[in-house]
Length: 248
Image (cartoon, rainbow, N blue to C red; front, side, top):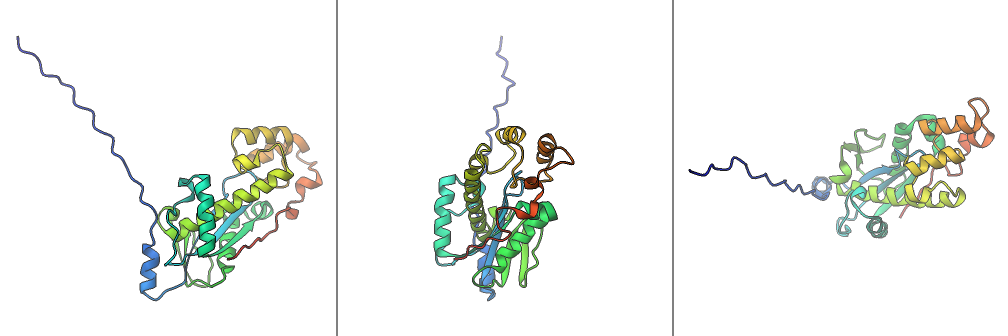
């Protein structure tokens, strides 16, 4: 009796998808056309329940681009810190902050675009072209090109993403010293379970974004809908300045 051939088909090997690092290709194309300086800009902090949105703009030196620049989300904290120092030492950099008061007033998208525009305008040298991460172009005096997923494509945007992320993390670390118990230094204001528990237990600070749903619920629990203390309603008096600029 002959053996039956096995009908099983060997399992296909899973394809390994490599993620290419952002490149200087778009900036180089502009340089060849005589367009320079070229800036990349990005922001950090759209999603959190607390803290500011921080935007950064960066003009890299084509001859001194730090190695390893990538989308900040792909990098470890230690590597981001290292690259932050290298970028600030070799490039033109500016940072702008939109505090919770502006987010509450304008909404998160408009506050982010405002901060990005301020960062570009604060650069020590005015760019002739700007790449910005996302779908929305900025109201700049030069050409502005929005690149979806730009922090993983355009190295100038990736550099800005690192500067914005590290700058915001450091600000949240400072806020953690003033408001112990919330864990700002760990979750950076994002709505993780530990933060939601602290928000429910302690109530919102002046650095919480007033109209984000978990903050609304916490404010109602602790202050009542129509009896919010002065510290919680004084949204225009955030301890963070409306604009913080760091340029190098």
